[in-house]
Length: 236
Image 1 (tube, rainbow, N blue to C red):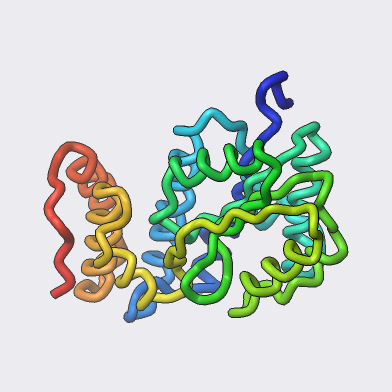
Image 2: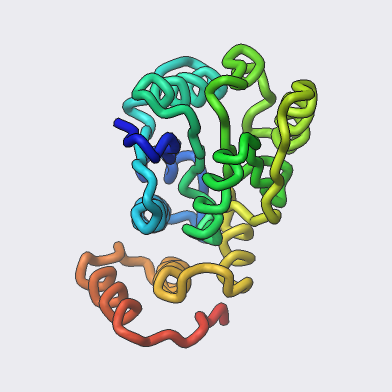
């Protein structure tokens, strides 16, 4: 529940790693186990990122989402957070690893000033949406052309149609929908070093090995990443 001085909550709206692995391929050489492992690390990274902020968070993944279309499920998730007593919601996914805790805190401050916040993704979608309950229009929001390249444009138009709303637009970021997107993000050096190294190793392993990724391999590389081996990843 919100405290007296905290009316903002963060909603992590995402697939489970299993579902994400079915929807996307993060490696050029299709490897379901690697896809699932990468998706799992992205979700856990997002949770850790939000935990660095002072805002309560709610992760609503595939089994807990209600509705048939993406728009219905996303709208219901946002309404469920408002129903807990919060008047401001920052909605994010788990597929934008260059998102920072500073982005979330900047968005929360903009919401406190009465603005709505949009974080445009490079593919025309959004990686962050900050909303005020009093100006939230569930029916209009539900009918956005979600999961298309026109999402940001339609959201901007929807917000602009309410003259009383001020809009804060964050810097554009790359989200991850494919193997090519993941490589771009890794080469950008805009994500946490431990995550950059771990994901790069997973990609390399998936393209050079015919064997399943072992728990030992994952734990070993996570430990190495966390304890100081910070060199840039190799894509050779």
